[in-house]
Length: 252
Ligand SMILES: NC(=O)c1ccc[n+]([C@@H]2O[C@H](COP(=O)([O-])OP(=O)(O)OC[C@H]3O[C@@H](n4cnc5c(N)ncnc54)[C@H](OP(=O)(O)O)[C@@H]3O)[C@@H](O)[C@H]2O)c1
Image (cartoon, rainbow, N blue to C red; front, side, top):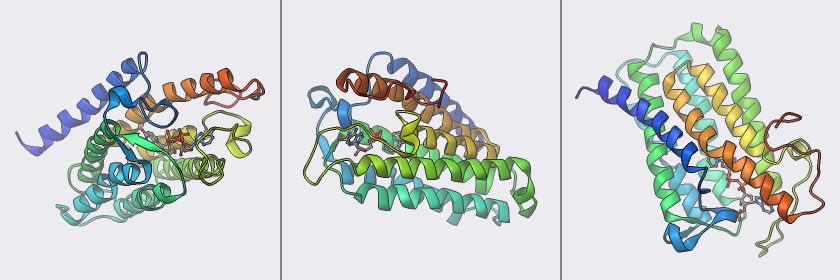
């Protein structure tokens, strides 16, 4: 099988995986954090090591595609490389080490590792070999400009919301509190809203199906999880803010 065919099959396999995750979410929630279920999901890893390992294929795979590229990288492609690395240096090297006391099932880490390896291959190979060459003119294209703005805005919302969550616990604490401030004034899951906005921006800025695979799989995971989290808070906290929506301010 030549690479173009393999690339196409893997792209569609990712959309099938997204549909599968959506169906699966009707029956179960990914077993980490508040939904950890060690009795069926296998052994756990400390969450720092888990996040680091799970995210590692993204920067390494993408950089490998850049180094082994089949053609000179245009300015537009370099800007997209910068956006990808900007996020994944944070997600791989900084986020896991912000203090937390939690674990993640090895099955979730293995699944995340495999998906992330696929995403970095699809996006890296598309950008540096198989897709159209993105030169300097792409930087002025409205798809790139709008996409980059969404990517950065989503990133800021995701990072600021994750920081609010990660600061809720005192050292050694493992329980849950009601998060307040920032995007939590409007929705239960502003970190997921930020993440999905970011990948919408990436899809637009790359104008590719490869970019859309991350958006589809992320949405299939995070939209049901946001709804589940919302219900979870309401069941446990009688004073949970009534006006707060699940994921979309004022709407849902
Ligand atoms: N693209 C994708 O498909 C994808 C998939 C998953 C995650 N992500 C991204 O990765 C980041 C983390 O996701 P996540 O699912 O781990 O988020 P999360 O469930 O909201 O948890 C984030 C961190 O905050 C802690 N925490 C959450 N709610 C808390 C509360 N009420 N009180 C005290 N501590 C609380 C969690 O502790 P515990 O671990 O102990 O619950 C965890 O350390 C997000 O930005 C998300 O968008 C992306």
